[in-house]
Image (cartoon, rainbow, N blue to C red; front, side):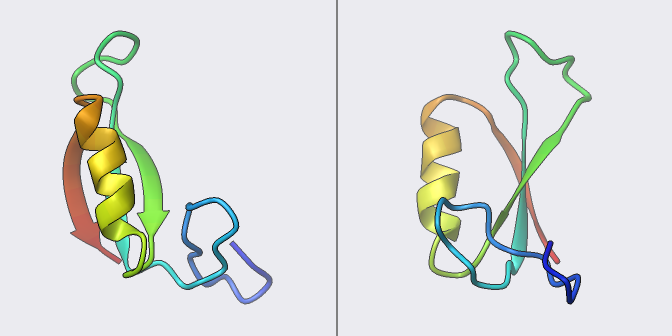
Length: 64
C-alpha cells in the first residue's frame, strides 16, 4: 500500500490502483482452506489470473 492506503497492483513495476483481489494457493504446500492474495489493476487482472491458473493455483477473484 502507499501512503494514501490505496491498494496497489501486485504486478511487477505497476503503480496503478488495484480493482480486484486474486485469491490463490499452492496445493503442494498450503492447506485447501488457505488463501494468498495478489491485487490486480484492470490492465493486469487477466495476465496475473492466467499465470496462477496455468499452475493450478487460482481459486477466486473478488472485487475490492
